[in-house]
Image (cartoon, rainbow, N blue to C red):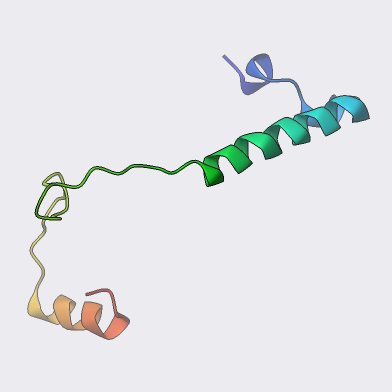
Length: 70
């Protein structure tokens, strides 16, 4: 399935439909910004255990510290 089959081509829409599209988009984004988003954190405030841990050589660790990534 192609994207063109899911949605109309914005460039080919009449100007009135383009304006309607922008108004609807603006309203959706405004709602996303206004409504509070709830993020669950375990009681100790730890990050999820799904994060992968990798081993790093001491040289690589020094480079990461110099770059401010650690």
